[in-house]
View 1 (cartoon, rainbow, N blue to C red):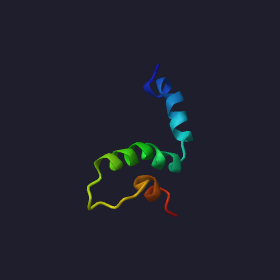
View 2: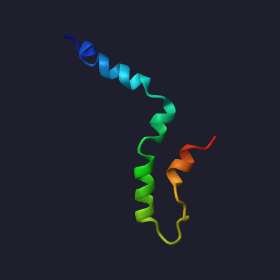
View 3: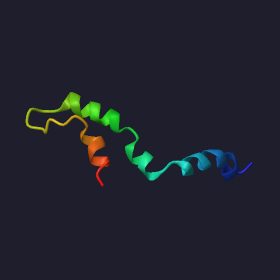
Amino acid sequence: MTVKGEYAEALSEWSAVTEAEEAGAGAEDLDAWYARHREDHDPDLEKPVADLLNRH
């Protein structure tokens, strides 16, 4: 079996993921990290990463 054949299914699944889904993946985790590590001088934003990724 070739490498391409071995990973064909995975490649097909990854190709199906839209750019928007890729950009938003993990945003909630990063927002939670920001909330835990925010300094007093940092903006008090509820969803800074998700909001930035969802700008049009």
